[in-house]
Length: 268
Image 1 (spheres, one colour):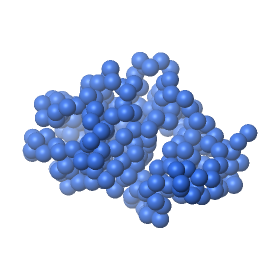
Image 2 (cartoon, rainbow, N blue to C red; image 1 turned 180 degrees about the vertical axis):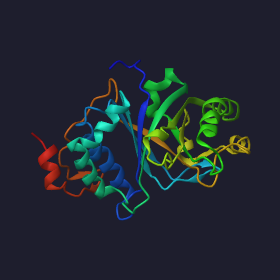
Image 3 (tube, rainbow, N blue to C red; image 1 turned 90 degrees about the horizontal axis):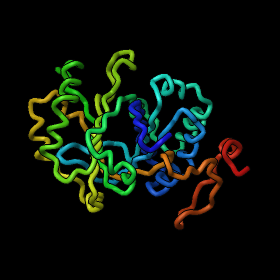
């Protein structure tokens, strides 16, 4: 796969953190243990993790998700086939360590990605501040109305009201993939700034939000978070397969990996 290849079929995985797991261990396990499991699934062509902070895209509410996963696929069929991959079961079991499994709090979203601008900075996004808006359409808006607004009106609104952006991506939920045509979120808006201070301060999008009045989105159900990307599978990026057992990292005691996970992914 060349770095210039365009992949538009994208999956998002949103899971709240297990409240009994510290943030430090959560991010470590997500990156060093959970991430490499996904590398065993060849259907996944690109895979990044979003590691969030306590900041948000004001005035939008903070999401309940401290981190999330983003995966790219060659086709819808390839995305669907992940469900039957045995490593998906292993990944799900490992997620029990990390995630709050309260029913209704996990979201898996299938979407079509569109890069609006910033193709030239894509190789360096790992070092940028990223803001993510999880958008829910208003209950009075029809799917066709929302999708038309998302594709035709939102891009110019972002360009004209949000300063300092170096990259802008919109991912529209594939409603046909859901039995009730009602995904948890209708679109994911991804924004990048070359400003690390925003990881500490958050981003003020008040002007942008003011221009959304009368649009088909639900402010009450649209949430946000701010953080950075960690690349797990990416063109030209070294892959760390089969992460071994580790005893300590940065002074933090690390829980022993379960035997069933070591058997699958331990040193060979």
